[in-house]
Length: 129
Image (tube, rainbow, N blue to C red; front, side, top):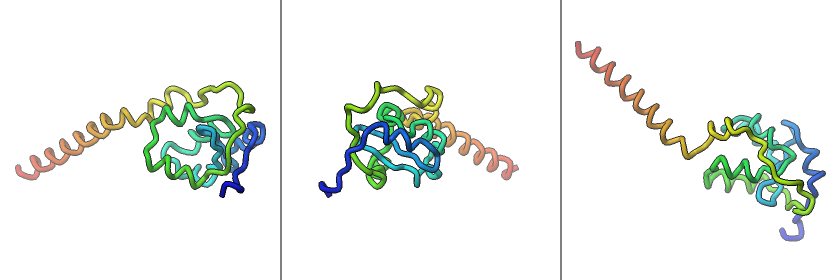
């Protein structure tokens, strides 16, 4: 597999910046995530904003799971020539980052569970009358 390793330049990756042709760079690796666009939990639009770019900062800020990191390997197509990458920037808005921040998810889950428990208790109370 080492002989199959491709080294890509940023300009080539930047050409793949559409919803139906989506390459991203994360931690020096290039991924063709086109097949995953419709399946991404945050929606394809979130990923499209990072297409053809170095999305390392955005990917790290969202806090992806170990499973997500492992799944990325199926989309791996090569390494990026680091000297061709322009200065790093964040392409996903801070609002989007907050929505998909897994560190805040437990609070949301607790609120949803609490509403479910309250609904069940109310139903039991109404049925017992």
